[in-house]
Image (tube, rainbow, N blue to C red; front, top):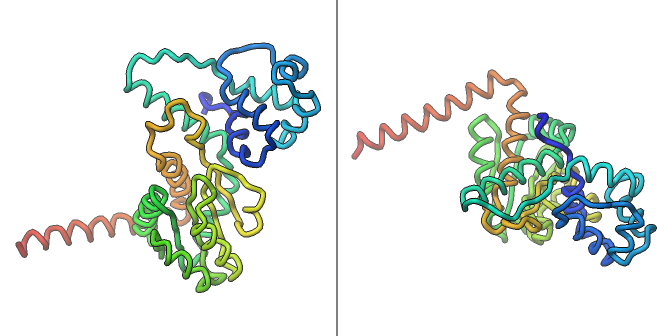
Length: 279
């Protein structure tokens, strides 16, 4: 894992919507900075027309003890950006690599282990999402179903509005919303939380209000601040995180889960063979 370094930029992006206007101005500078330079509090304050106290408040809102600790972490993960890209292929590959680096920066393995434990104890699992997030929800259903998880994906918005009231303490509900603003997904989580189900939101934005009804908020990288983010499938950061969760979950009774996976694949092969014979 030597290649991966925790990046302060990823933390800034995940908390961006909680910043004041002044703090967003500071955040934009650090997100889009492309070259090594003097980053002392005095220099940056003068450049951005803000006070050094504002820089300190910004750093603390990002989770650091002060601006000095923030800058130390920022420099650790900083890589000078070069705009000259040799080809479209390299543009895509470099963007994917940047997303993987950001995923590492956001990853909380203790959190993933807690969620794996919830999954292992749950009688019923629901995962919901809208649009591309709905496709990721469907992929999660297909993968976890094959290893014995009783899981349903929900993409219908009316279903999301209704299903929350039927949840209970034996269930776990996953919501996928990159923006953290998909109202139907948030409504499902709020109602499920009221009925004692475990609730997990996968998002790129950590909003203060989410902790009121989400037992876990799993952060994934945002495409919003990437130079070539529009070229990348919005499902990618979510699918990477689901792969990580899947790999941890499989560790619980690994032999049994691998057997279930093989059995489901064998059942699919038999079904295909029978369909061919009937034709």
